[in-house]
Amino acid sequence: MRRSMLSLLSSVVLGAAVLTTAQAEAPAAGTTLTFVAHQDDDLLFMNPDIAMDVEAGNNVWVVYLTAGEVHTRDPMSYANMRIEGERAAYAKTARVPNKWTYEELWVNGRPLATNRLNGTNVRLVFTFVHGASGECKDVNGDPRGDLYRMLKDPSYVARPIDGRPSYTRESFTAVLHTLIGYVNPAHIRSSSTIGHRDDPNSDHVDHTSGAIFAAEADLDSARNTWIRRDEYTGYHSRDLPENVFGYWQTRKIEIWDEYWPHDPAVARDSHAYAFSRQIRPDDRVFRPGTPWVPPGDFSVPGC
Image (cartoon, rainbow, N blue to C red):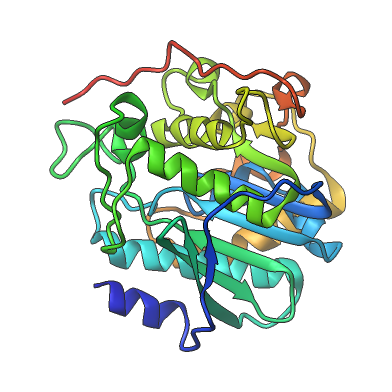
């Protein structure tokens, strides 16, 4: 199964980079690192900010913290379709052909699937950690997912759906921390760590879980924020005022129109409210040296 995934991602494999320790250099201007739970969270909730970086020629890294699979479809097949959608979307963003090079990136002894858009500074990183989907009553439904389980149980072992080495909370956080050091971004983007408060009825558990992992990875030894991190609102943005217009709204829709045809679980207008919104609250910006404490009220019922 993993072999078919790699052949889909690229026919070219370059020498693998091996990362084992985080750097301590000053952040690199013009470099951003985004952590999202699913393939499409970046396009819906963090654009046009990411698109602006791409258009400026900046170094843009996006990490997908789950495989983004759903309980109603074959996991790897669907994950691969979403990957193809993201690749098409970023090629559109950069205005270049949809041609990518696969680069295996070894971080703390674990391989991460990394795609580099040829002729650009755009890289997409995929972990293939099992995501939450459906409800307890659904066949194959799992309303929690492995990100949440790792957060709540340090001994829980998460096994990526493509057969890559397993993770615990400690090792997954360490991989993300080391990756931050390697990328050395000027700032980090993530979903909201309090999405469960903003939208308790429908925000996705993976959004909040993934954001908490990003925040934990972005801490120094004193548990203060290491690199500036901005949190973006997810589904709750539909209830907030529009703030994306003109050129950037057009671009956001153009980019989304490259993604959604690859994703059979969404329609073009499934999240049309997001076309005119990008919510990054001022009070959810964590600057270097800022203490960060995970939300103690984040809880999802088990099956």
